[in-house]
Image (cartoon, rainbow, N blue to C red; front, side):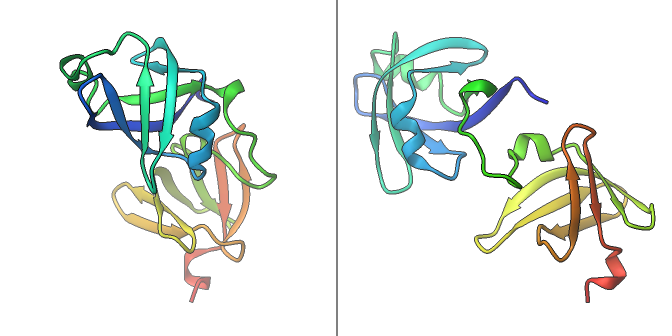
Length: 162
């Protein structure tokens, strides 16, 4: 499992004093209020303050004090150590842990590795982008088991989904 969890992406500057506009990659925007430190390119940075917008976050990070400095961070990711990540309810997983899992069905047929997770609003969709692309709805009726330790997800056979 990854040691760091990505919680947001810097999408732009905000103001002239080095504030950063963040696109959150987490379900709960309020988690940013509790951030005291983040990692950008593996370098630890202290969070000075946070302001929540309707769907974005404005962060003031130590040592980023001008718009010129802030521009250099555009499109970079904010990460937190796994131990500081929000505790997930049972049966929920970080996208970073799902990506790369091998998908097999109950009959042992292998479909490939999950390359991406698409958030649709009603349910997530696991995307396998190998020789044959496959979109797997993350529904209890289809996904039988998820073993993050062994990077293995078992689903019902594709032909039974209809």
